[in-house]
Amino acid sequence: MKQDVAEDYEGGYRFAPIEEAQVSRAMIKRYFTTMYERAISDVVIVGAGSAGLSAAWQLGTLHPDLKITIIEANVAPGGGAWLGGQLMTPMVIRKPAEQFLHRIGVPYEDEGDFVVVKHAALFTSTLLSKVLMMPNVVMMNATAVEDLIIREDFRGQQRVAGVVTNWTLVALNHDTQSCMDPNTITAPVIISATGHDGPMGAFSAKRLVSAGLLKELGNMRGLDMSRAEPAIVNSTREVAPGLIMAGMELSEHDGSNRMGPTFGAMIASGIKAAHEAVRVLEASEVVAGRVVG
Image 1 (cartoon, helix red, strand yellow):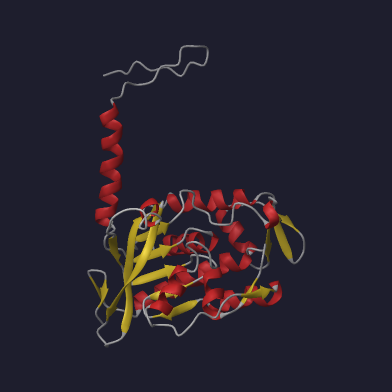
Image 2: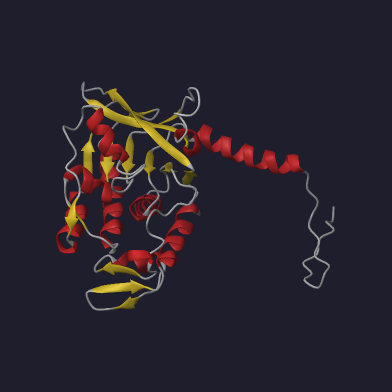
């Protein structure tokens, strides 16, 4: 049946017909099908800032067979990577992290030891769009991780085995309403990249302390770009069985310096987190999302 539509910008633009219920059903069907299918994921990435998105791109590109689920508390993904320092727009990236810009197709100006992207949003929007186009990657934004699933594994060790989720607006209103129970996602590997301390920042690092898996937070030290960036990248690792930590959250966990408005370490830490996730998966026997050997 031919549709009576027209892309006419002289006053005759006509849309195809639609019913309100069709819109609702189209969204509900896809969203809740995704929730159903991703109740067991291969890798969950908590936080869709520059580190989390870089990890997702690396994992999704190298391993299109993995079911990668990103959980982001904000409505708008991207974390602090929409701007540079003090609300200025250029983004500075120290070499050799500019190689990642080549891979995703972001232009820059070369300043010798570092490069400058003309607007941080160009980097973040490009990376975000490429990640979301991957068929094996899904993102649930406006969704908060309220807790970690922590189980005793086959060796008798405490293992992070998934995340406990709720819609962010619900998570922010537990004190104003009666009990609103969460949902869960089971996964053999969690990558936590929730940023430095804040309303929802450093979530997993703080939860490890309250769960008795970490004695105390190291607490982020003062700004030192030269020390901070290599420390973050080289220390990106599995900080507890099943939990890999990346980006600025790691500075709170380890007590390393902050780097301020330079983003190479966030990119490289995300990439290293992806490689660490693959290492954990390859060394594990996984059944129904649980590490059994």
